[in-house]
Amino acid sequence: MTLKHSYQRATGLRHPIQDTGIVSGYKLTRLGSPNCGWTFVDDPSLKNSIILSAGLGEDGSFDVEFASKYGATVHIVDPTPRAISHFRSIIERLGQPKEAAYSDTGTQQPECYELGDVTVEQLQLHKVAIWSERKKVKFFLPKNTDHVSHSIVNFQNEYASNTPFIEVDAMPVRDILEENGVALKDVAMLKLDIEGAEIEVIESIFVAGFLPRQVLVEFDEFNVPTKRGVARINRAHALLVEKGYGIIYTDLQKSTVKHSKGLIDA
Image (tube, rainbow, N blue to C red):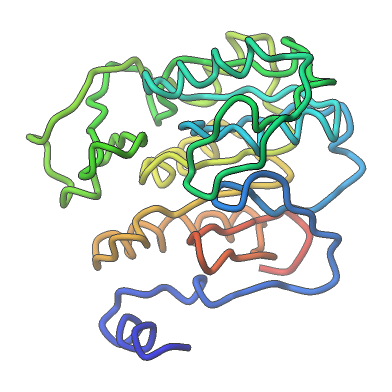
């Protein structure tokens, strides 16, 4: 542990799950670009599966590679205007091969994706924010407006309610899936990269009875650590443990945590 990490731990700004690392004994695989890829358990049940991927931004490398590798249907949730535009650029290239290497900036050009065997049915975009209830919400712009990711909870600006925002429609997971003919029990994986809203969403999915086999989550509030943010993450993590999930992989660079249900003891 670095001196910085030791200081954060001593001051209550670092959570023990950030130091979990990798639990051995599982067949892990990683898909996606250097900056926006995700690691998960390579399980046979993922073949022809359905997954819910919340947060696209301008890097759909994980979603595209997952659809291609597993023949899966990926339901992508993101109302951000630049994300919607990026998704359109992906769809326009369906059937075409990769022509350029991934960037490590978090923004990909359409030519970076291998789309030769991905169909339009496999990538479904829902232009709403994922949230704990159905309503209009303020979607706050990032502190650096060159960045793409907006936030409902606005953790980058100390949870303020008066910084620049756009208004978008928000829906809970159950509504998004049911309106698209997908039963909760049929979703194999949930990926959350939603700029702090993952706390409320994790709480709401369990109320709805949604227990995906694998949960991939980036706890964004670790990137701007405050005691309030760490307490919120602790609340979500405790609920995951209560529901039978255990951590098997933590990306120490991205503050992402890979939970699987029933794979290890919590």
